[in-house]
Picture 1 (spheres, chains in turn brown, yellow):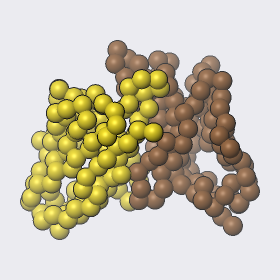
Picture 2 (tube, rainbow over the protein chains, first blue to last red):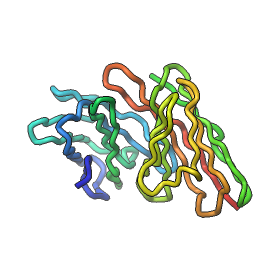
Picture 3 (cartoon, rainbow over the protein chains, first blue to last red):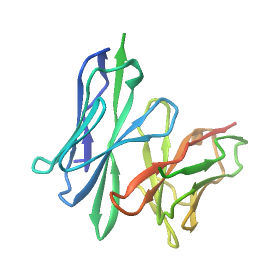
Picture 4 (tube, each protein chain N blue to C red):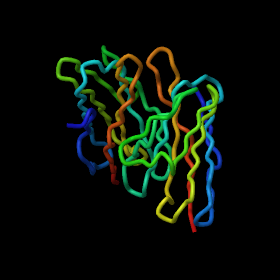
Length: 111
Length: 116
């Protein structure tokens, strides 16, 4: 089993839709969590960190469920410009730090 | 926000030659940097973890003698693709971990390598 797994994609949604991605992690020593966005032929860029209490940034809401070991990203009122690949990233403390990337979920928002 | 710079952004080289790609953290020190490769329409693939002052840790299946990594300072890691072949043509991306609250990862802009 992979240490970090994401929903298989692609997700095809119409503009204005609400879409949610999940990312599960297997290591209970996972300590910090992030969502990144990667546009085609570009590097990933930090979208938001995920805090234990959940956090919101405009149309984007990230949540962490430690008991079930997953994080989620909710996008409301999808825009065409939201089309991208969304990566979850987990830092695991194992003496030092280990950083694990999910494989990414592709989102296509269509008019 | 933190900045990671990667150079060159594009490089074309002849088969059999070596190419060096640099990754610099511009406004923070990074004990740990990462190197990835990404083929078109595929996921990022972690190649190796670069540790300042020590040997890099390579992922399974990545040839350490072909992809040489040197992390000589807290702000610079280099990836050298030795004896490049056309199948090495890819998008190479580095990232650096900014230590502190959250240990956030910041990515370089990536380097497109074409081997002809």
